Amino acid sequence: MNFRSLEVVLFFVIVISCSGCAPEVVAEKVEPPKVTVQHPVMREVVDYKDYNGTTAACATVEVRSRVRGHVDKVAFVDGQDVKEGDVLFELDPRPFQLAIASAKEELKLAQAQQEGAIHDEDRQKSLFEKSAGTKSDLDKAIAMRKSWDARIEIAREEIKSKELDLAYSTIKAPIAGLVSRALLTQGNLVNAGGSDPVMTTIIAIDPIYVYFNVDERTLLEYRDHHRAGQPKGATPTPINVAKIPFQFGLETDEGYPNAGELDFAENRIDSATGTIEVRGTAPNADRRYVPGSRLRVRVAINEPYQATIVPDTAILSDQDRKYLLCLNQENVVIRRDVSLGKLLDDGMRVIRTPTGSSAALNSSDWVIVNGLQRARVNYPVQPMDTEGKALAQVAP
Image 1 (cartoon, rainbow, N blue to C red):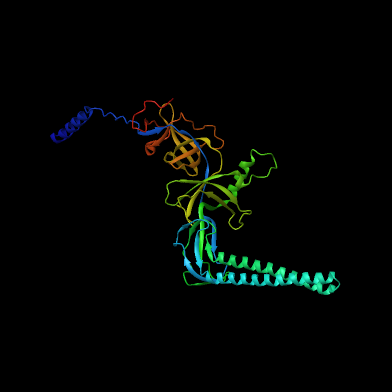
Image 2 (cartoon, one colour):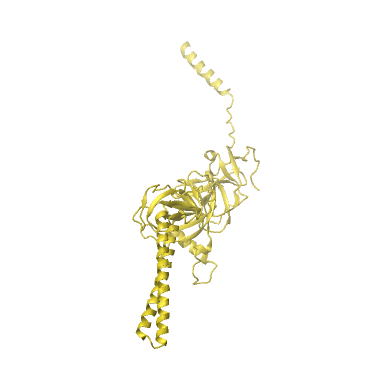
């Protein structure tokens, strides 16, 4: 062996010796990931159906004149709130006053003729009793007197008619409500009988009507629910008798700040849409709602019941199955399949036990609500409460 070979051998010996003296590497222990957990909450809830609706006036009147005449005065301001009986328009009263005066003169004439007929009748009766007159002359006198009696009644009725026309020349509000603008102003000729357009329109909006369409399935559920406590074969309770409450709000409102009661449903289902029109009535003293407003409507479809709820963000999906990640007594993650109920306004979700499962979620369970991406089924985690404090053991 030459000197060069000896150097190579010594080099490998030294390397092997140094590698054998290296310290042993110890794997670092990994702590379980931190997750936030909380108990399911028990709360009384009601199931609702949500719809889109519109408002409508509870009464609408097109104001027209009953008599012909010229508009002498418009007695309201466009858009004014009027009471029943308030004066809206005044027609020129002079033609009606002249007609009344003429009718009264006709009455006086008839009364004068009647007086002469009465005297003639008395004379013919006296002559007939003395055998100086004929029965025919007496009958004619009686007929003439009765004729003027009738004409007097006609004249009196004509006066009443003319006085009524004069009263109609002052056009008053038939209902209380909001008046529209004047469509016929001072100086315009008004023709009675509807040949002219309406003079103005009044709408009553307190209470306000709310219309919306309910699907046929919900209608059947409602009927089944209300028939549950009735004898078999009993007639369903009419909607106006049942006094079903509903809530509603404008598209810009938060939640459903107003409430009313359903009082009407159409008598047939629209075959084209499979829905039925329903109406509710609600107070509107502050005139916040006007006809034609678009609304969000909510109607309860059952009585309040106790439900288990969790944050909707805690629910995970596995294709078409929904589940929660819970913890066992060793803080190990387990999967709990669930069936979802309604989503509440505060972001909480009603949880139901899936069909065929006996493992119902209860208020003592711990559900992971935050840190779901760090949790793995069958692996331990470090539970924290919603305030960020560590929980040593989650088992009750």
